[in-house]
Length: 403
Image 1 (cartoon, rainbow, N blue to C red):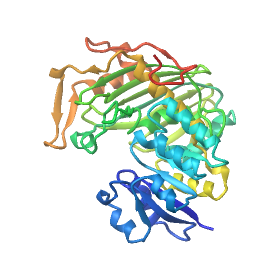
Image 2 (image 1 turned 180 degrees about the vertical axis):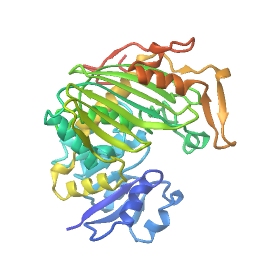
Image 3 (image 1 turned 30 degrees about the vertical axis):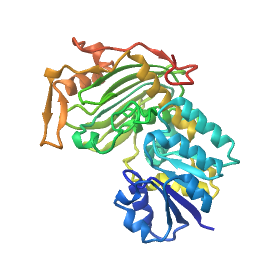
């Protein structure tokens, strides 16, 4: 029996799932039974999907009034992740929800509860590195004790984003939606969310678990005319005493990363993009080459389909693995009293009108200095405008905002 799939959201990233399914090679153990998207006609894949003859619906309630599904692939805006996942789970449908799990932790806990009440359905979250065989090989080596205990970790992602990025929809860079729902869109919660999650995930105590964050401290800034931040610099401490440092910004003139360094008692793990390499070197001199973890949507899609066929081991990134990232992201928002605007006279525009990046002069070098020193940039090179936030206790953090 084929896995019946409903696609929830086919614009943006959802189009990649649609494309992956339509270009599937070999036997297809699935069938698309419906599309849920009130703006489906605007999506690039609309005509291709329409030609396949399935129904199109504005919402999941309309879909379930006429259909059943074994797997819902949810690629809608962040504000809808919770409600749509919970509705699908209430019908006994397995869910693959795009990252992040949700905007706020109370939604993530609600999704966990809905999964637990669903009579066996799973809720997978689409952090693609977690499904890659390369990252799974690293996690297996860590779990085996091969590298000893983790001590500290850091990841850098300088990712310029232009006007078109922030103008592609009505929620990019927003704290809340027009209807007042939390979104908390930012590089930490969207474009580079994978890389913060990945640090928590690989040192988690089981293949489907991440490390538990104990506290988070942040510097949050913006160069763009948005309500949230475009530059997030975080220090996370786990309950096992591991220091995790994350450096990400869209307000820079050049790309660098993702790249990371993970230090253990008996080994150091590194990843870089140029030249592409992902490897571990033990203190005894052994070098382990893992290969590139950069994968298409196929890995997580294949895993979700296998899970819907009954292979529970395929779901390596569910609620428990994804929720720690949400905790860190929410706590970071409360580490500072306000998002700091970069000094206006330090901001310049790079590129042609319509595709310009707002650049904070000297920011890339400042962030890199922090990365090199294993410190927050505001600690290693304080400026008149830098604000290092206070540590936020995450031990009993169940709601955003917590106060």
